[in-house]
Image 1 (tube, rainbow, N blue to C red):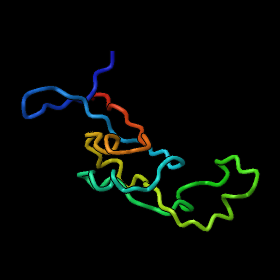
Image 2: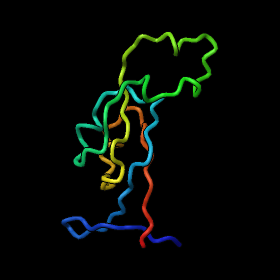
Image 3: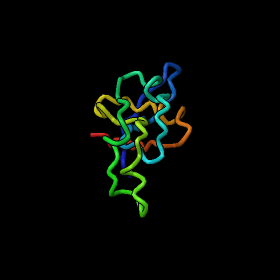
Length: 105
């Protein structure tokens, strides 16, 4: 059985942090809620055209390339600075985040 890194709350309860590893940028609406709630500056808002690869979509009509929409999506700027609080997932209206527990050394 794998042992994971654990923390302790001020009240003495044990908890296991889950660190962000991925954002589903196809479903992200760029609302910025995760950016605002993150205490560690882990995220960055980028243009959707920069973040997404048009080849990832089944786009028989060429809509992706002709899209003049400069909408934004969230990206992971510094995942190594994540403290595993999962606040980003708790405020995300589209459930875009993937988190993992880190195994103890």
